Image 1 (tube, rainbow, N blue to C red):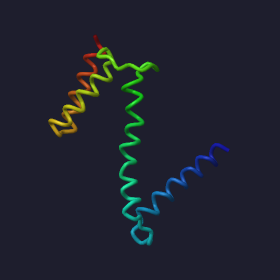
Image 2 (tube, rainbow, N blue to C red):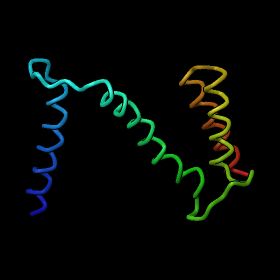
Image 3 (cartoon, rainbow, N blue to C red):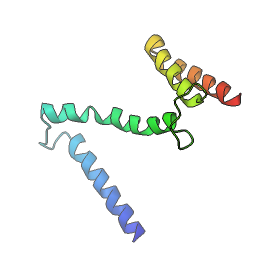
Length: 102
């Protein structure tokens, strides 16, 4: 039953992606649907990082003693100023590891 579920899920995901990526199919989204889908990536990424940053041990932590929060703030500021993904990732990870070591 597990294999059947995995196969069904794989077919569903593949077919939903294929419908939008195959250029020979006449399926096109209108402007409103395209605008709506443009919000899906930030929404998914926010759903991933927000619990990690604000609930590191299962409880709300918005103090400066939370290394996840401090490193996230540093990452946002670095990304805004430097506009370099690699430098932002390296420096904010270094800040996180230094804060969690102490």
